[in-house]
Length: 151
Image (tube, rainbow, N blue to C red; front, top):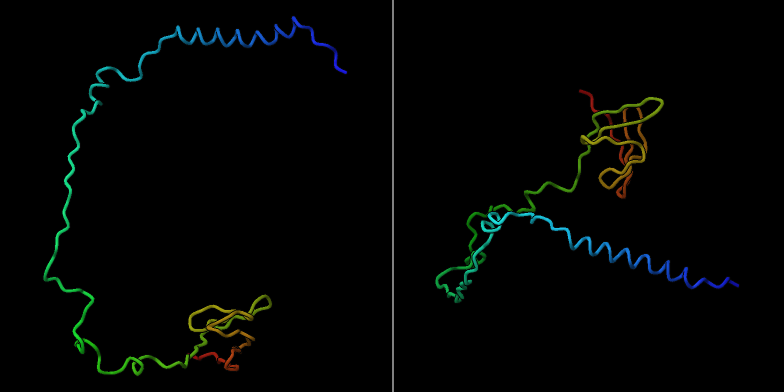
């Protein structure tokens, strides 16, 4: 069990912080600081209060403007006569193998200007194998050997 606390010690330890706070408060009240802004600066910065004028606008009706999105029915001016489906390139993608680099550490090829390695994905297919003069590309449509072009 804890020893009983001496009453005079208790009063001393509780009174000292209260007295210190009172002294600090009295000292702070007796010190006068200069204002951070001079009276001339305060006068220049003062904004005179003036009444705020609000103009309530009324909705205006506009007549005679046509919608920029509406076109005349049957207007074909500016459209080509050939259907777009005929002008678009076909679905057959031609792949062009232009470079193969092979050494003990890596096998790299350039197909359609894109650098690929074995196992890479390329235009929905996978590069299955890279040999000295050709590359095997496998996809959903089957497999295709691309042969190195000679220039």
